[in-house]
Image 1 (cartoon, helix red, strand yellow):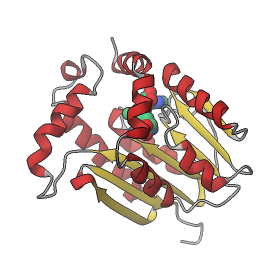
Image 2 (cartoon, protein in one colour; image 1 turned 30 degrees about the horizontal axis):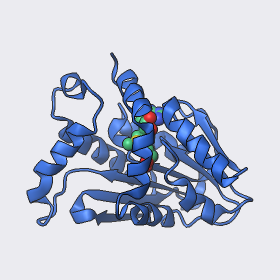
Image 3 (cartoon, helix red, strand yellow; image 1 turned 180 degrees about the vertical axis):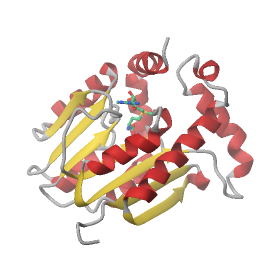
Length: 228
Ligand SMILES: C[S@@+](CC[C@H](N)C(=O)[O-])C[C@H]1O[C@@H](n2cnc3c(N)ncnc32)[C@H](O)[C@@H]1O
């Protein structure tokens, strides 16, 4: 089974449980809120949530863009999108849409005001290229933020990296280890680093924040204005 098929099967199967973890884990709401804050959204803005999963970021975005904005979540796993769709229906958000598709070949066109992607780039085959493509969907001056988990390089976090590795293993689709030459946590680290390189290359006014002892990273940037 390919990595994509395994990921879709895994996330489709555990979508309901994932939604509980993604929305109720202590601290996760504040980190999502912090990530969305870096987008400096205004009422009426248009936002893409790449690999939106069950829509755990939606409330933080919808709160800022209001009923005049547009939010589109893209994900390739039907079960995750069912949860996202249920959230949209429950909340009665008429301007929030979910689209099934591959975020590495976005089934949407720009320009948009902002792009967010949380806990996704570690699953992308070519995160550097894909994040570069996402930046090109932004209008000049539009913002992007990536929220990710990776091993900690902070003194306080490093002793807990073994625990993090166990978490990565437990939360990876079956067969992940045999599909890569490197351990899954190293694959995750290098993909998160590659995504950040693309952000460094394609944006200005970058922000970076480590949270949760360095295990969570929030990296943002702005597409240059045409005169920058
Ligand atoms: C760990 S979950 C994160 C979900 C959500 N962003 C969040 O913060 O809770 C990863 C999600 O990315 C989706 N995903 C991974 N690669 C994708 C791709 N290339 N295209 C679309 N969705 C993708 C998976 O289906 C899954 O829903």
